[in-house]
Amino acid sequence: MPSVLVTGGAGYVGSHACKALAAAGFTPITYDDLSTGHRDLVRWGPFEEGSVGDGERLSSVIARHRPVAVLHFAALSLVGESVRDPARYYRTNVASTLTLLEAMRRHHVEAMVFSSTCATYGLPDRVPITEDTPQRPINPYGWSKLMVERLMADHGSAYGLQWAALRYFNAAGADPDGETGEDHEPETHLIPRALLAAAGAMPAMDLFGADWPTPDGTCIRDYVHVDDLARWHVQALVHLLSGKGSLALNLGTGKGWSVRQVLAAVERVTGRPVPIRMAPRREGDPPVLVADPSRACALLGAEARITDMETIVETAWRFLKGRRVQPERKVM
Ligand code: UFG
Image (tube, rainbow, N blue to C red; front, side, top):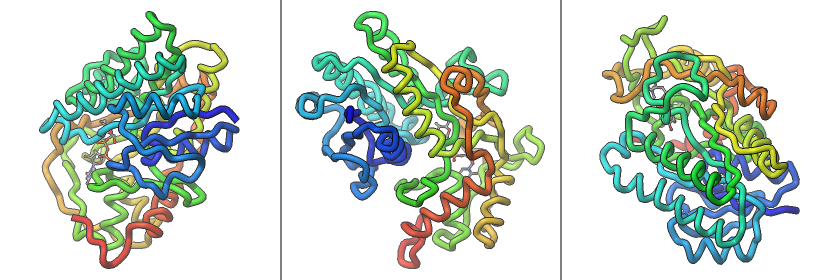
């Protein structure tokens, strides 16, 4: 079976992608430094511990496993932290990717699928967001991802790299079989925080602003199920390997949910109220981010299978209950 190197394969989206790769007949080689990933979520192929910034280690792993491509997830991904410590974000997300691209060139690995983000669009003038929307990030995290898109495009023109920049909207939910899921420390994302608050693992969840220019005053996001995301990574990989050309695609459902709608779904699924503390708007939050998924649908057939918020929340709840919601483990 052909091998695929998966950086960050012990993380949230990366581990789901490993499962999808294995289901499609690839051997995922997880390369992860376990700074935020989890060893026990590496279940579908070999594990190689290492940092993407370590060119020697990368080279020896690539030489041994001879992957046909790389799926590159390993990155720092907290917007606020990137504002406070941009140098760390540019070092980890950008400089390390250059090291990875060099190792790939040395060993003639010519395809890369990259975990990009809707944060590269910043505050878009119009929604839904198409791929032609100007990319104007408003924080170092978004810039670091956009810079990697540029690195890939230039490596494509000059050295023939086949690349896919997959700009996710809000990755959400967990493996429907419960074998992997989202386990961040600290957890900043809405759905797991609301679930933890409903479970009593934290006293209350801050609701960042109810005075936004939206129908119920709370922010609207496009929550895309991680199982759909994972499958689309494999489809993008197959697209590149069959020589169909490089891609920049929005990965979303095209449907927006307000924070209050998500909280209502969490209450229905858990059967418990979500204790809320009203908080000011979080800096840098755009009011509405919704994808126009037409291009991904046309080029990859990337139709979302899970679009119902209760199903998204149910999968997240099942994983979280098994892993994080224990009386002795308080969160913040
Ligand atoms: N929210 C709350 N309370 C919380 C957590 C979130 O009210 O405790 C709100 C946020 O203000 C936002 C929505 O819930 O309106 C979703 O927030 P998340 O933190 O779950 O997700 P973001 O939309 O901020 O983040 C996502 C990706 C980032 C990416 C960003 C681009 O997770 O990687 O979109 O805007 F950078």
